[in-house]
Length: 319
Image (cartoon, rainbow, N blue to C red; front, top):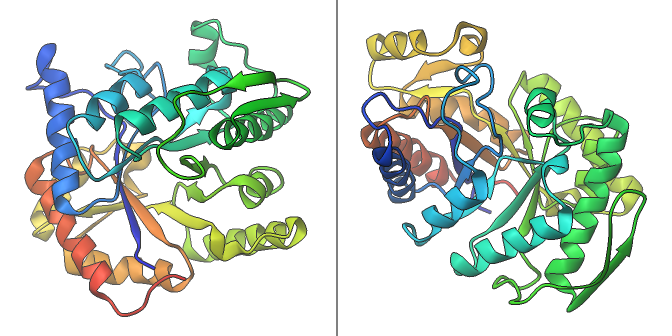
């Protein structure tokens, strides 16, 4: 099947677009991504900006309001967070939000969710932030509730942390079976087991190819344990590439990436990028995410579209 390419927007700080112009720039980037051939547009679900992207005080738009507005400005791309921290929202309310996004977008919503990690913003907003073991329990319960609310007329579930009783979710999602569920994170004991049992898409934030192959084998072992065909789950990665026209341009762009993240990126032409990413495709990975700090203009996004065309023109496909 075809590869999945996501355009991720973790950055809402634009020197030449502030105030009312800020969201105009967000729309410009989302529309450029759609025109370039990206399949998915995502935003972070955070309340503070995170380290490695910018200072904590930088602008951060609320995720689902932003996605709903983007939905009215696009026609084809899927829309999701990358990803919602499970503690941020009651899972039934979250399922309602994602269902509403599916209706607003005419069937283009996905539910992106993970166990949450940013204790600072949780404390700042007065959100309970339990230990990781409990957050993992909450993640599995939240995904279970979402799937029930996407598929059942009345959803009931009694868990250790969350419950719903005859919960109505009307109108129903546009997509048959409800929005796909994307689970972010690569924790090998629990996150990958939850992905194997419940997820449609898994997203890992890049890394060494050999280590990712090993992690994929762990995921496949979890699939065997829960009785799931691993080919039913698309595994996607943060691409870690800067798409440039020349080596000189690549050096200039790398200087704008925070030093602590710079080693994770390489500057490549579309042709070089396609060759580099093909090794991950050959290893069984089905998609890649690029982001707006490294693709800040419509021209840069269009250049990434050249990579997408090259990758999708190759005869080998993930299956």
